[in-house]
Image (cartoon, rainbow, N blue to C red; front, side):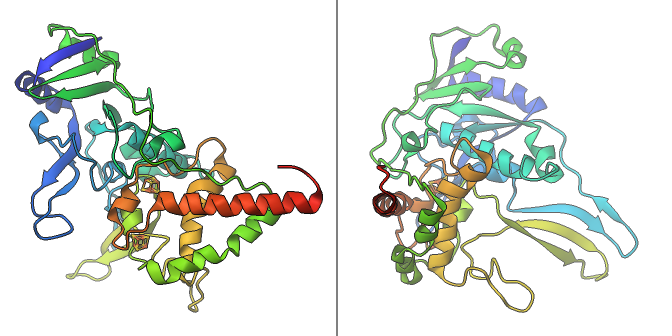
Length: 350
Ligand code: SF4
Ligand code: SF4
């Protein structure tokens, strides 16, 4: 069923929903952007539908709702520990199609990557339902169509904002009673069918080609360009790396919190081990790791989709204007050449 609602009526219904749900959406934080006179758009709890920034791409993704920047896992003293608690209320998050796919990639990383699901992720993820925000045309740096993440059916509600009113599709039967007396409408969300950017994905066809991809000079070009700041990975919906740290209380250094904190494979000390050995010492090596994880390793390990969902936020946030789409297209050109050389050497056509 679908409904046409004024924003004020939607606010009344939202108030009722807030009795049961905590509701997150992209919100504007004035003068908190990259420069002193720019705004930041990121996820936070909303009180009104007018709080939602629906006509701009958020600078940061909804991942922080279920994979917070910093998360207390447990509290400890010298004698015992106690797991941290979470708000048991279910959560509604306003998201775009690519971000729903991005959270599915996080699900794979946290719930299927090993013998046991990550309990700290699962306890938040199990509470989440999605409100799909219709994404009519995308933005300059989006390449969701190339990644196959422009469409989804994995949502409870879907919304199209139209000035002082909105259209709302209700798929999840648990929400139907709330809208039973509202004016119905003919509405299904539309999805982006073409982006301005097209990305070609590398098709690495053999171990031999993979090894040659590792040795490509193109990675060295990032040694001077990439600052290893990690801004791209912080903005990325599908980046899941974290580190853990113990924060001791000042009154008693033997008690404190163990916290999970976002980390980045692009930070220079990310792979440093005891003794000072690091596996990826240069920015180019780290860029190679991130790029191949996004469009090769994840799919090779789990099958199906790539880890990157083409939201373009990494490109938007990079202070060095490194375009991830351009990196992928450049890599694909090199992989084509390596595949052709490998085929010529074996006499097999590609
Ligand atoms: S790598 Fe870039 S384009 Fe791909 S999902 Fe992450 S932020 Fe979006
Ligand atoms: S945001 Fe740009 S400069 Fe910073 S780590 Fe990512 S690619 Fe490198």
